[in-house]
Length: 376
Ligand SMILES: Cc1cc2nc3c(=O)[nH]c(=O)nc-3n(C[C@H](O)[C@H](O)[C@H](O)COP(=O)(O)OP(=O)(O)OC[C@H]3O[C@@H](n4cnc5c(N)ncnc54)[C@H](O)[C@@H]3O)c2cc1C
Image 1 (cartoon, helix red, strand yellow):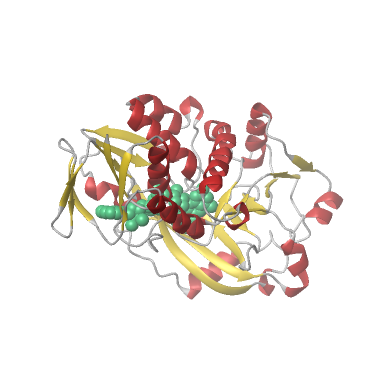
Image 2: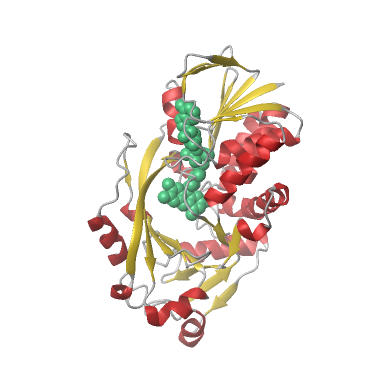
């Protein structure tokens, strides 16, 4: 079988990796470079963690998602530590039934280990960078930083060295879904038995008839140095995903020589144009300010740089896999897809080889228990 993967983000590259491992003939076509600066996958790092709030179906898939990356790391050329920095991850609970409470239920169900810090003294000792007020407990589990751009770069290298062409600077302009023909901006066209569309926010333009509402969502990130007197505490800090109450905070402590990274999903917005990629100084300050009362000495954080990037939002933030003729369209994103990248690649390759698209699609959507989640 001859296949073409459109898109050299984490999902497209991992799909090509998994197809190649099954002996399938595969070519990757990417509009930009790998990594492409405008891809959702592109940054120094992305978070991984087993916490998933109400989305128990996704939490249940996290052990497999961690394992899939370990399998990928064994194939990549550098030692594992270049691709993954384990920091541990924390969530804090402030009220019953909040994100931390729901995540705890998931971890209990799947037998994923965690540690609870339930007294102010325990929290102050392990997490001295947090303002402890209002926290009923903190929960620590595995997780950390997937070094995104390094993974993408080395994965493209791996693919090429195993005979998979990764064709850069080749935007696809049109698809013939019935015939499996891919038309390129250069005027050339390619034909395949299966075309796997992993084009991120570029998906809708190539499959305008797809009857699923997908919306690019603008998301802000700020890199900052922590206050000097808390630098040692931050060097030992876990990443965080949700700090309790009606919030959508996430981020990583300083790792691999980088400053720490602050995110806040509530500061994102839907934006069908997918083009407002300049973060303003005011946005960076507002993002830092949104952490006041959560992290100690917010005024001591020195802003370094920021980013405005886009991910593709699907209904209920579930992953989508859909067949249209010879095209298999994948949106395994909704703002939480990097940590699933290797597993999504394995899943999509299985759908290609077995032809069981519906079965794999149901699994990727988190099953009946996928739950809705804020995009994190
Ligand atoms: C700011 C931000 C923070 C995030 N944080 C996390 C996190 O901490 N943890 C996590 O798990 N997830 C996170 N995510 C989500 C995660 O990054 C995405 O879910 C994931 O990277 C999606 O990968 P993808 O391969 O589907 O899409 P993309 O990475 O967008 O890749 C799509 C590729 O297709 C190419 N393409 C598009 N159109 C065409 C065309 N016409 N022809 C050829 N090529 C084309 C693009 O250039 C691009 O390289 C975050 C996303 C953002 C934006």
